[in-house]
Length: 554
Image 1 (cartoon, rainbow, N blue to C red):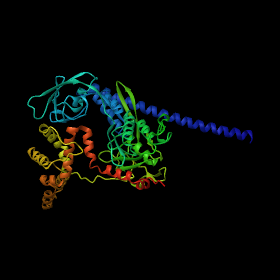
Image 2 (tube, rainbow, N blue to C red; image 1 turned 30 degrees about the vertical axis):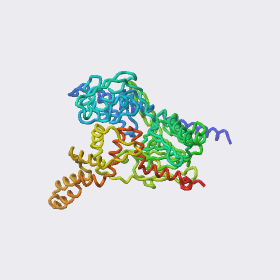
Image 3 (cartoon, rainbow, N blue to C red; image 1 turned 120 degrees about the vertical axis):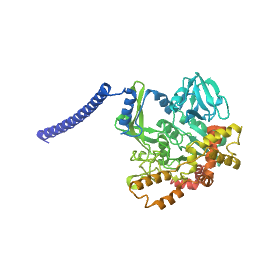
Image 4 (cartoon, rainbow, N blue to C red; image 1 turned 180 degrees about the horizontal axis):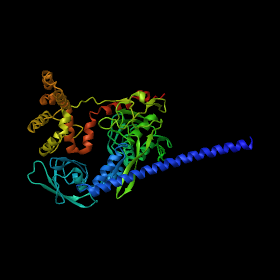
């Protein structure tokens, strides 16, 4: 090659690099100018409002609204957390806070104890579900919000709190004085040995102790009962720390197995997660139960088990949250939870829904047509798809309809009846044996009559909207008889509807009663008695041929 040709090629390369560099510089300059311009506009608007707006401005509220609306244009998980929500941030990652250990809710003018946690200060000092909170440390809390009362109940461990309560059936208020404690919610809500040496663990969240607590529960069942199969229940588990999901996967998979990777805009957001240790339970058969509220770290755990054919997934399609958030401090005690990457599980698919702006009412993934998804393969060659969430190997479906049982629940009628019931019943049968009597069911029906229970169905609401439109267009008189006939059909017959949906009403009422006497564990134990997903998981684990067939094990 001549020197002239070599020189030309080098010159061309230099020119190309120069053009690329100039384009990058131009792009960065344009971005910097755009940011500077918009910040200047925002500052100018705020300054003009401060000088000339007719009313007094609440600057903190105005700024929070502006930031929230800006972030609303992005994904649902990038949010601003002001200083007062710092304690919530700690609770999300550790499951810890200091307080009395109880759930609360608003009922009328006051906030009410809805669910004290067993073994925690509220329960140990005889605070009961249904107790209205009148005062905290001498402060009348009438018309206070739930968040305000929650803030007052929390505090430093070992600090004293004085609570005045009104209890159903008591004429005078009760006063309770005790100390706040460090509250640690165990992420393993329940564990039990079932038939055929099958263990069961309900994992409610992925905090920094989830893996250790799960290992402790499973080891205990192995030691005491020699279990050979395990069911991990991830229903309603909204996720949490990805490292905890990876550690749990490490209990069942070979060391160094890639289980998830993240990809983002910046290099520091790209990471490969591998199992960190030799497996403790390498040969244990696995079944994982999911539903549409199983999200994030739950989907990583279920998805990796499915992609690596390590176990069977049973239940509903999962939520479809495949976005990674990091917490960034932004000054003055505030934090920004910002989406920085996406999750990809072992088959290479992303568990994020293709479109997170169009979902079911609860936020979970709707039906995604196959034409909009891509096919991937598991370790054993089974076909799986992306498009959002994990589709179980054995899909179950909740066929229950939106009926009177839901409307009773939404008006807190099970809760209120249980409060009355507990005032006159010192005990009930244990969860494994409890059966709601006909006498108690009839008493509940009488209670609904006493409080004049009524409800308006969604169908009735849409019917009224239809009538209003027909009236606006002058069609109401033409279809008058049809409208009247339809109204008769869709207006609820409460007595009939109660009898038609007796089994579901009995179940929800029984759960509320069980919770009053046996707390959260009792509620779970009772609900598992008729759990269709659990029964499906047990049957699959008992039948080695079905288990092998589902996982394509030759």
